[in-house]
Length: 177
Length: 462
Image 1 (cartoon, each protein chain N blue to C red):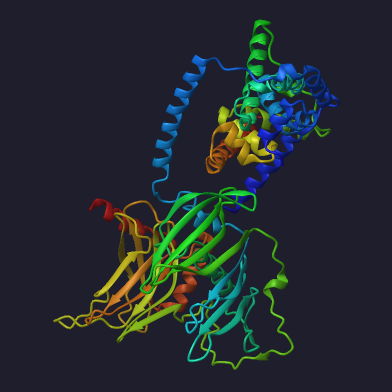
Image 2: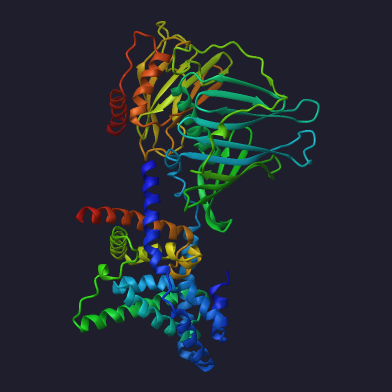
């Protein structure tokens, strides 16, 4: 697997494939962060394009190319905050999570996914990010080091905490349902 | 804990399922992003020049951060007790299967510079009642080192033993279903745990992190000293799997150099282990072993024979099974050679005997209460023993030391086996049948626990 720093250098040099690889590597994670911010998968997908265009256009500003992932996460968070501010100015409510088009054909499944997403959104930010990284990224320990500034063991401890909290949150949501 | 494992897997499945949608690409979006990127042109991607004042400020900040990081590193690298390993004994109670593979290194004492002989070993366990273990025996007289190898296999109904060197085997029915169950747990909770973590007195400290087969592992080091040598154990602990994945043991020689004693390079839990692995089909050229006279009483579910025995200069100390009553107490079944008589001819069966927790923890001591004192060297005593003070130990285990008047000591390591309460009640009844006179009532689990609690409180009140 090519290191992030190499991809950044190649992309700065105009390498189209490198830009594509950066997108492939981090689009799911960025999508998850935007989904946390917007509560809507369709909104998250719209913003995703914005995030990557901003990031790729500003790659040269990135002083530590190996921290690409953390940098992308920062841009995604800012994009999410802007979205929320804009929405609150419009005095519109966020699109409720459950209004997303059903992910799968089975009704019980989509209900379960909605519950899980709600539980994930209620996690503290670092723990939420640890869960996203674990389920969406390939080189988890490396990504955690760049994005969360955590050693592998620190990351797995944070992940354990997050999973434990999720388990209780899901049980709680299940009871309230 | 089995439930925990099940819940973990269930949570994993739910999360994995809910994340599936986030991995799905919106058609055309990737191409749109990449095309836009290409349109940006090279000039937009040029690095910015940093202004001189900003550069100085950044450099100062970097120096400050570097100093802070170095300080943190110095603090973090100081020796500390391992945290990740502490719950391993508890976690291993709940796995369904365990497979451990490695090799022992045998050295020829007459040719100390010759390369060692690498002897592979394998331990397999499938709860509730199946296990298979390879054994190795070495001896050396005037000739070259002799190695004997074999295996002991339990399929839940029978036990088979082989001596592969002599091409011999024996198979016989196990005493009872309970006996197979208890033997399997003894193998899991004592043998395999000791293979992983060494004896309980091994203090581990984290010395770093290392990638092993693509997975970040915490690296621990422990040192244990017996009367002969110091052994240094290095252990790679995979925090995602919650167990070690590689262990090496080196023995320190008289000249200060270390030589490899053992390597475990595969530890897997909850992997499928087929029935056939626990059944012996002896090769055609194997002969039945000469049978020894059978001593076990087939009316009993558990054999009353000692599990471990040691003696020195006329003193003898024997231990039977020990059962864990709670996180710091055990029922210990033991017997000893007669104590010296006091001036009034009475016998104190605890005289010259030390009982201490196996883990050397600060402020921790063992406390003892009789539940049955046999008053005979060939009959079993029942004692409740607690490790009082400090945090509960990782392993409820004790060391019994018997001293004679000439300064000789004989000792026994007693590891209390953990069972769920529903099984432990039955085990206590069967233990009573095997090791107590018929007129002695067996205390219930609740009564034994009440005694253990009294001992702990007594210690606290002191």
